[in-house]
Image (cartoon, rainbow, N blue to C red):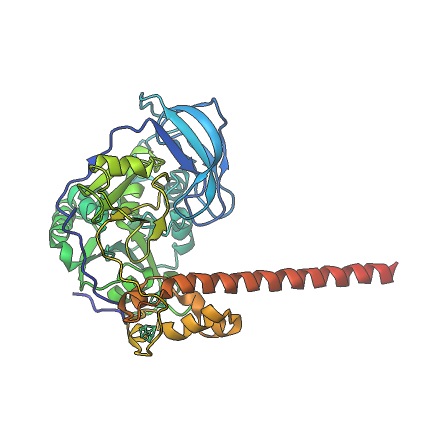
Length: 458
Ligand code: SF4
Ligand code: SF4
């Protein structure tokens, strides 16, 4: 078994509600709302307008700079292109499509004649055109990660840790789609030119490990599975790299700094599907769970499906449901409505009706130091909390707040129930705002000096 990373916690995994349930297909929704911002980077520009007819797999959003294109997930008529609520907060420009229930595939979707004969550049181009991003929630464009890592990366890791409680979509993919996982990993080995790809899986998914090993043996694939001791947040890229290689990503650095590239299990499936069939990312597996859900399930649905339909498909919400979370309980975001769409990074929707939340009024730090012992980034959360609550930007910078991955391990362990992670999000925003203000002031000063020089030269 691989060695561990520093810190972390071991919450109850709460996976039993869904980990033995096969992925079910949601009946086709009557309408989808496809956000133009589903990736790390600037939002896409819509390529369609109200009244246009679209087909499954047709490109409807184009990116510029860092990003990935967005595709229609159903066939039908564009009803509107307008801002709609989104799980990351606020409204984002979205393409609303009325489903004609014909499930027509776009002519743009073309399977390569011989996928195994493709060059590295051709495979990267397919990944780019398929709109593949980190499906574990990070949503970093996959083609950028591959093209930036080719020649520099010697360790390719598939992230099967799935350490966050409740979520079981990756586990089910290992069991039900192991050929896609191993096929995608094999293409990644080819793209990076490495002899072996390592899949890291926590040992609470032993049947997933067994299934992957069986498929690797059948396919003679250049892939090995490494069992990992259960520990949250093992699925964080930096922690996974350390658990597998023993090397630490430097502060402010990326896995590529130590020669690693990490891909999620479902991202790997998407790579396989795009290279073998030409189909871009148009569907997502979502774990729907929590005490407020009548019948928790893993559900596959078109991107843009309203989350309310997922809850309906799982028997609805129980009386007294008081909290909805998009994502897991440690890193997810609370939602005020179920009227939000499933996006590429949506892996889980939780609803709670029982008294799981333990909050106290006016929490006070008792300086026990537990948060320091669990922080996988070697930070001192108790001081970060003080600096952020007082708006001390210089101190926040000196304490490396931007290295905080918002994993929530400190908040989970804090006996005083301080809202640590929430405060760190605020603190990071303060640092970003201050940096933007300083940059704007420097640019204004430079422009004024140049204008002055021009006047003198005249
Ligand atoms: S765990 Fe909570 S109470 Fe203990 S030092 Fe950290 S912030 Fe303070
Ligand atoms: S949320 Fe940030 S400060 Fe807290 S344990 Fe995670 S990385 Fe450390």
